[in-house]
Length: 317
Image (cartoon, rainbow, N blue to C red; front, side, top):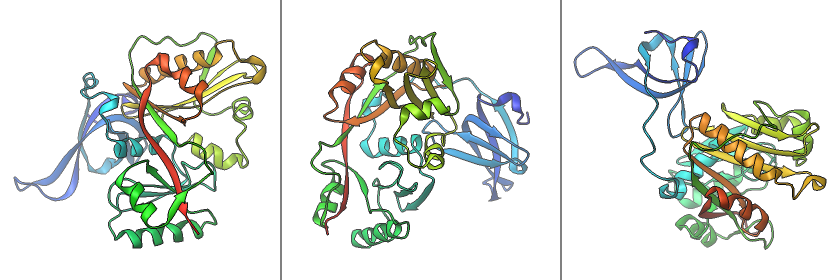
């Protein structure tokens, strides 16, 4: 069966040639299994369950078909390794520029948020630590940005950076935490909530942490499957939800001061989780500051618990 637009959004298996000779003497082939995200005249983009996307040239496709949705999760959110979860969260908040340094990811987006303008430290950089740190500093200096590293607090890399003279960035505030939850199919979207694929002008006004609108939109709207949730016209409550593979990420839940203490934030979260399940997620994460007690209290009834803490480091000179 050839690929066609009716398969978009479905789980598919695509067999394609990869070059060279296979074990039987014929062309070498491989299968890609995942959700068909995009299809044009030349390429099919398939998202694997870990959120990574594979672009398959249509000229190399031998066969394709839809397959049943994956079985229920085999591993809960809490069992995910902290470094793996760092990779997953990075896909949900993609920088406009991403350059690999071995297993690390050098990210830049003109200074819009620390997550999109720091090196995500996971795996091995492929070079000696001292050399890796020089390359990190050079990357950010070339873009007129401060050199920042996002590290899992208390990890071996956290200690290695500290030994190299890197220090905490942003003052004495407590570190940020990543919370996770296993999702259930019972969430019901709020009837008054609107979920759009792009951030409306009203949504962006509520978000308000924007100096360069173009850069902000590039990051916020970057993932293939993202929803911008709002209640009210004009919006008085907003949130952002992204799905990459089997994971959903929640962010930017905000309520206008005059509309607080009316349960709007809870309704935004409920709608976001319902949308995430509808789009194939069975686990979710969010990132907040450890001292943000109202946010932590908001998410607790939805089953979110602490997974790990991370912090930003910068050269101490």
